[in-house]
Length: 229
Image 1 (cartoon, one colour):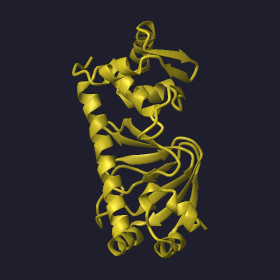
Image 2: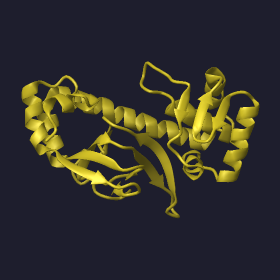
Image 3: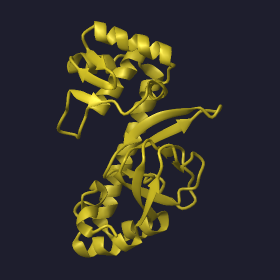
Image 4: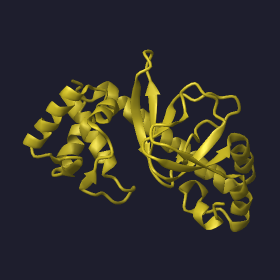
């Protein structure tokens, strides 16, 4: 069973008392998802919330042809599926294990009960849902309005952001070329050409799956550009 100390490491449960956490932990069930397995699909009822212990989960939406477009990658101590808190509400996005992933699952019914009982949890859930909606809005805006280079710049800045206060300049990209293309709403050919152009401009350096950000300010300007191509 997840301990109160371990549960408190998740931002959603930060600030709760030991007595409150001790009521929540028995309601968590551990599950393992193999790489590629779906936690839920768009259109599914929102019956559970998932706390990631290890691994990566990709959140995605689908178009009318059933094609998947990646919205976000969630790692350990993240919570997936929280925006669906209204009974009977269906999910607008899906989630799948990007690699072998271990999660703790709590039912929507239990989460609603605890949110109503613990004011700090209600506040944390509000912050989490607000951030989730901001990320979806930001990605949707990027897909609609940014050029391919701008969308790639936005992706790299996101992936190298360790937290809200610290940035790193080198990452091991956890995505294949096809997955990068899915994230930025393009095909592999244009993505490869865009990467080559960004390297020629001195913005990044690509070596295998490693990407080094050479000009973070330049990438930030590119990610703010209004022109889509």
